Length: 83
Image (cartoon, rainbow, N blue to C red; front, side, top):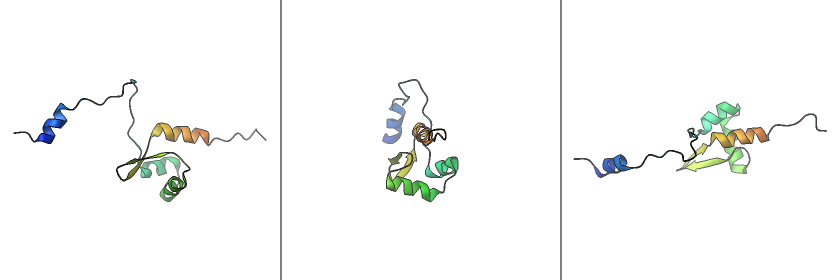
């Protein structure tokens, strides 16, 4: 006999994005730290101060959407010719 949890998960609908674009896994602070080349403590400090890429809470864990990270990195670009 199946457990009720197994029956629920078997009957659960597939969660695919409606827009047709594929979702990327959320980044952990450790992954983002390595990607940006900044210490892990810097990410936690940025999150506490409300600067840096926007973090999402998943339970008690911080996660980052790669699309938002890329947008934030693009916004950090400086134009040396504008002076």
